[in-house]
Image (cartoon, rainbow, N blue to C red; front, top):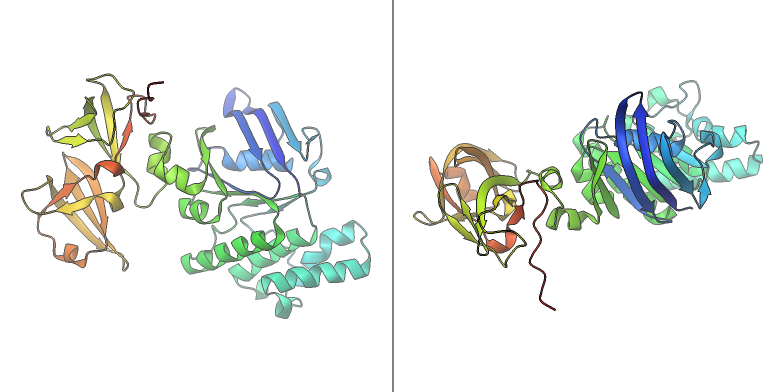
Length: 358
């Protein structure tokens, strides 16, 4: 396996810049997930690592070696695509062994590699089947097996679960996590699904508009998002946002409600800010306490209930496991625990606490 070092990389198509100064170091054996909305540049970056797209500026290194000018076949990287990309005229064993046959590997080595990958992925009984006789999940496992037998320096996954239904995606996430645990392979995984990112990644790279917004462990992005984009993208349902004014370690909302913060922030008194709180952290208060909100929709999910509210004229969500919320009247009262509040400055960047005096 190998480390991957991306230094000041840019990508442009003519005058259109799609990636801006990407700096990213991926450690040997690490599982990194590139996440973001459609068009953010994550798949383009993955294809550049694979050599399927050229680098406009900057440098890419795999295992310390510059690869900007290397063809894809010379980078020793295996890619798993969303569309599976299996050969329809070959059976499972043929698809998995094809790359080794092209390299003229010994027959014994090919047989052992295919058997080992098939065992890891539960494909032993399917080796003689053609792709048309497989389910979507089985086809994706074959695509992963084809990558495994090559024993590449790194695995690249380009939204591999997008074509699967919700239950099968859940199963395949577990397969990929298990595979990574066994192989300890350097892996880069692209998805727009933040649940996939949270459950699979050692580190998440959140991207938007061709720019890396934040890099960190999944719970780091959840607990301390660097800006409003990350705060709104990571977490389901997404974070609620309300306009407010900061003063003296507190924030004052539009209805003049004062919310106490755990500590002072590096902001001037009177600064306009945005307050964020996750739906699962909102408290349903007793009548007469907290802030009154109008109930627009009650959405049971099984495990919990999502209340769609109107607060200060804005859409606002609460997630609760209290089934009493199913019979909520036209109005509920909500309160914000101070430790669960996120504050963002006028540019949308997370406001930092005041630095302690030396």
